[in-house]
Amino acid sequence: MKSYRISFVGSGSVGGALCREFFTKKHTIVQIASRSGNSAIELSSYCKATPVENLNFDRECDIIIVSVPDYCLKKVIKEIRYTGNPVIAHTAGSYGLDVFPDHIKRKGVFYPLQTFSKERKVNISNVPFFLEASDRNTMDELKNIASILSNSVYESDENSRRMLHLAAVFACNFTNHMYILANMVCNKTPYAFNVMEPLIMETACKAIEIGPENAQTGPAIRNDIDTLKKHLKLLSFSSEMKSIYKIISNSIIEYYKNR
Picture 1: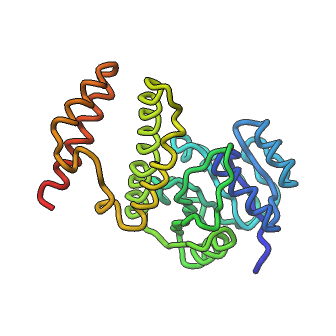
Picture 2: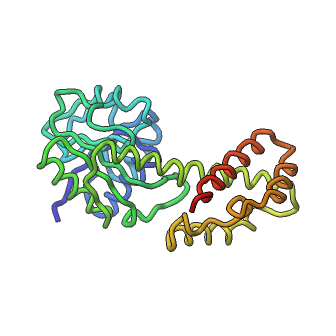
């Protein structure tokens, strides 16, 4: 397999994880730019790269991966300066090729469908990557690069990828917020949140193995009005949590009403 020369814009959770994984797999990390100078310096030191100021990439590479917050993505890409003819690809799930200025000809999307945190190492070989590119040659290059990291690489149009990103918000971000609320309820008892671990693990495994529509349990699917009322009474300490409980319970009831 070709040895790639890779540069990064962004050294946060996503960029940092991808950068370290490429370096571990013996590819060359050329330069790293970041709004946070210290994180770029730290990551550059680890990956034997050169930290970059002002988004000026003066060393040739095969690809520049842009992994920055969505709100500044278009502005950051517009400010990138580079030599040679690298692919410029961003990692955002909800944006397409329209964020690139016209002068960038080889452009793409390099979206890993996973949650990343600096405190945890992700097994990237299991992470699905969804790719979009300006042309066939650029797509082939992106597929080769993504295949270095993962066994699951897909071509994806912008609309499909945006829907997957939305699905991920429900499956990950909203679910994690439910854990936060569950922890708040646990704090009303003598027991710590970790007593929920077997339940959380079984719920996730069951949803994957038999499908989430077949895995649903609880008072809402049974339309157990008495239990629902008891739970709402227990939530008297939080009107917000009471509203969330009602909305989710009603959604479950409606979903299974005609099944």
